[in-house]
Length: 380
Ligand SMILES: Cc1cc2nc3c(=O)[nH]c(=O)nc-3n(C[C@H](O)[C@H](O)[C@H](O)COP(=O)(O)OP(=O)(O)OC[C@H]3O[C@@H](n4cnc5c(N)ncnc54)[C@H](O)[C@@H]3O)c2cc1C
Image 1 (cartoon, rainbow, N blue to C red):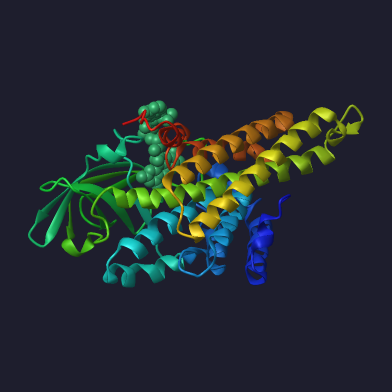
Image 2 (cartoon, helix red, strand yellow; image 1 turned 90 degrees about the vertical axis):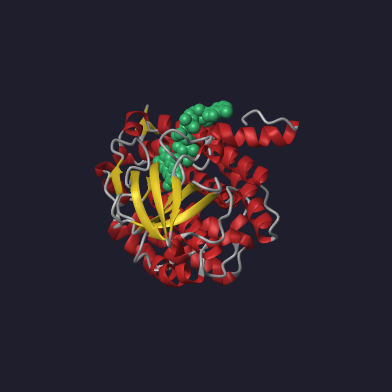
């Protein structure tokens, strides 16, 4: 549902592309994703369908920010795990190599990434440093002739169990400068283990990564990263992407609940006929429309290269808060059936928890907005 016709701003060609992606996502991904989620299994076959639609290289085309955002929302509407795979792959891995990598790194990886023939991982968070990672990076890189030697640990790294390489954020031991290093997964001393028993994004694999004297050529350092400011630029764009994911989560909530209350009968009537069912449905639709409109504004700012961190932080924190509120209303509306993943709503309810937490938690993004409002930083 797009009450405000945000998608109406797309060109005819872009609108056709979005509709094509919606068809595949709704008919070939949505229901199929539930089993993968239950089994905590990476949905390789479903990603194959998205590769055919060119979604491995979403960042490389000339599509507008609005189209990209709406595509991310459509993917999240079908399955939030899959939209996370596509989002991290494009926003944080492919985008990072394109913008901050060397000519050789681009030539070696961009084509393969665009076809989902290769995967990368964005390895920033560490076991002891999450929200305070900007000043807390403990992983190190030490220059030794024409090589760097990397040591440290990374936690929560998406696709880290099977990716061909990880983009590892580490501190240069001599200069203390933060840098980013492309570390192929088959380098001796590199290991990744799957984080089991997650309650959300269950089909996207997250890893604990260990780096023990891993040697890489000097050419594997990303030349465009000379400080943590580069990470902030990437995180600003990816926070906007999570805002679109939250929009997709609210679309999914409305889809699932509208279908359910139309067919479920209690007291001799469909649930849809009760006022106390229509009121939360209207609230979810209002949350969705407010966020869709806000994200449309964010896309226009991105188009003009005027997006600031405070905008992205406000959009991310607001959209994920309202997606969480909406998912709670939706889950309750399905009664007992809202507790099992078979009816989809429980899956959305759990996945929204991750949107609330990753790419800067709700609290940290709120504090970025609070700092802009007051001029006082409450977190550094
Ligand atoms: C499923 C999943 C996928 C992820 N994927 C990736 C990935 O691909 N790559 C990557 O690098 N990272 C990834 N992350 C990591 C994610 O970005 C971190 O989990 C997040 O930044 C929070 O860090 P933390 O978990 O260490 O929590 P902590 O920083 O320990 O925070 C715990 C709680 O304290 C709050 N808190 C912390 N400091 C303050 C403060 N000053 N004031 C008020 N409250 C505060 C937080 O908001 C939170 O509620 C992923 C995480 C998850 C769960």
